[in-house]
Amino acid sequence: MDRLIYIAMAGAQQTFEQQAVTAHNLANASTTGYKAEAVAYRSAPVEGPGMPTRTYAVAASTGTDLEGGSIQQTGRSLDVAVKGNGFIAVQARDGSEAYTRDGGLDTDTDGQLQTRGGLPVLGEGGPIVIPPDSNVSIGKDGTVSVTVNGQSAANVTVVGQIKLVDPAKTEVVKGLDGLFRTRGGAPADSDPTVTLESGAIEGSNVNAVSSMVDMINLARQFDMHMKMLQSADSNAQRATQLLTASAS
Image 1: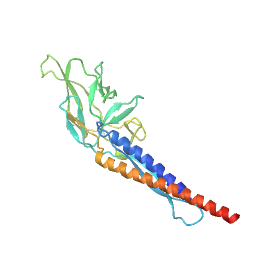
Image 2: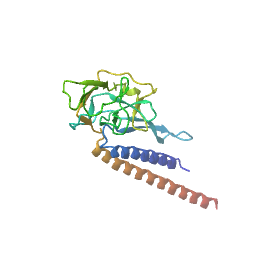
Image 3: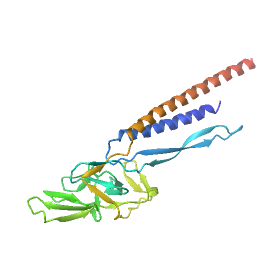
Image 4: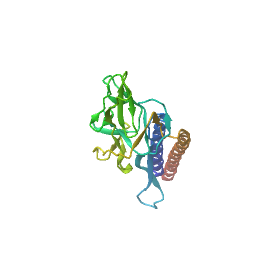
């Protein structure tokens, strides 16, 4: 059988997987702090008898576009946006330290500062707890200050400082839960150069128009690979007929 059928099949598979990544990005175009995923491909020559004229399309690596999204002003005291590079440290579901750009924060019934997804926000000494009936303000360095309702605004109490990190981009990987971690899994060191903008959140960095164009192009590529499969199958059937006729 002509190796074309395997090459077309591999191309269709990689295109289908790229469509899934693009669709996932589109679905998160309005998700706070979302970073678009990307897949890189390389060509792999088909080895065997004959001239090396055909190549497979093979996924080489997956990665994440860490470019910042647009900053959207909300005026809400618990909303923060990371300015430039960096991440907010949170406690993942498995108890490990992980990182996010989602600065839409809230508090639970116990006053613990957390993301809207329910992940505790980590300070230098662990999760940060907000006293009840308090007005909260978050400084650009992550300092969380409160004033109790009914008391003078001069009675400000610092309850913690959000841990902000900025590991090298090559050392950051995105997990299946959408959170970032260091490659070795070890906690990153705090970085005093990372700053926050209070009363704002960072939008997704997905370009919806560009992603829609990519989806159309990928659909056309998938159709092309399917037509190649049909052509390879048709050629194989005709070759079989010719061989059968010659044998008889």
